Amino acid sequence: MRLIRTRVTSLEMKSRPDAVVPVPPGAGTVAVFEAKTMALAEYRALYRRVGEAHHWTSRLMSDERLRREIHDRDTRIFVMSVEGRRAGWFELDIRRQVDEVRIVHFGILPEFRGLGLAHVMLSRAIFAAFSTRPKRVTIETNTLDHPAALALYQKHGFRPYAVRDVETPAIETVLEPLRALS
Image (cartoon, rainbow, N blue to C red; front, side):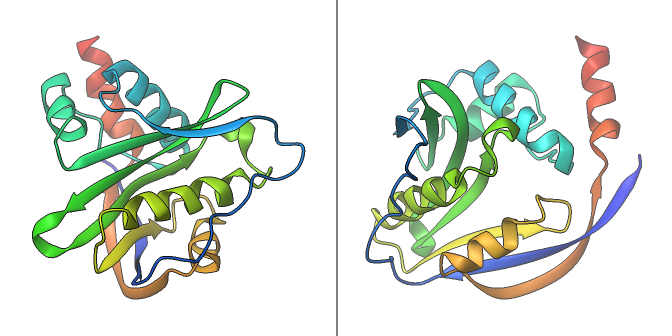
């Protein structure tokens, strides 16, 4: 298995911003809505479209495990659409026992990048996370993610609280066994 070294930055926000970011003029009809029980195939399609280029592997798992993860009562998934087309999604892990909400995944599909929509969706993710009244909201990014991710999170008020180096499997080493099962 080929491993890739990456630096992970953990960030936190302890208070909700005053207002959501408005949709940029000319962006069309933008909606962000909760997908209460997203179909596994739809989740996988969004996950792979965003994450494959960045070696995301944490949700490449069996149907049973994925169903347990994304349909858990403490997991909330939201989808952003533009003119009725899926443009991105984010996933929240509501950690009630530690009074924290973690933005687990946050991704804009490639064809919707560069339009200011990441700001719109991140703003909605922050407000959705704070709707449960946690003491803090956290998010992580690493050096394999989109190069603008860390700056985006910081621009919205997240502050780094930890940095660590890890090794993660290269995407092809995880996908190859899955393709063999298909």
